[in-house]
Length: 260
Image (tube, rainbow, N blue to C red):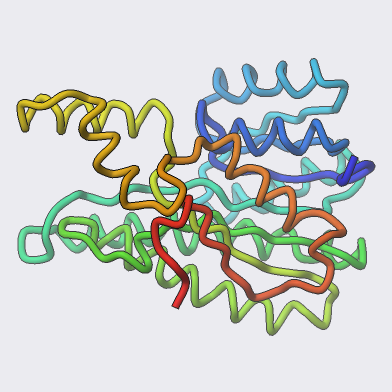
């Protein structure tokens, strides 16, 4: 029970990473504030958290809206009494276009969610995190800040900015007793990656397994981790085990790439 008595906010609740982080927190004893734009998804995950014996508070919120973030945080603090952890997991995947074909207003939209949305939620929570004396902010980032690929410029730029601001917040919020760290997954095996691999297989005239094996062979461990496994690293950053750790990034990718 590494998070017993804690309250964590998790944004970007859906069927993948947001859900798995929330359930991992609940298993370790935390109550969870579920933030997202779709009420039905929030309510479904809330039921799963409650089935594990923890409190769940679903809050419909667009994190690109600063006022909505402030309202969500205040609702959470009032309902659950405290906020110990913020996990900025919500994201916009970008436009999947090369730079010269892209609408830069679409790049701005991606930046509004991935960078400014995370900043909105974090700043709203800082007074509550500071009050605990041991607040935690965890940014869910990506390998795209390290492995630059065609057509992912909007996404990589926004997440690269988030990686830099993670260090800035670690420096500036450290005196308030708040640790700020980043989790950088590679391919997260789940429905969306499975769909993408099937699409690639059909396009190339090969099998799904051939595509999977090709990508998995690029990792040291020979497989692509599921979001349930990646959630364990988020629990680590949120827990007493990571008390002296701040301003750091962990690549959670089966050894697909190495930091630095």
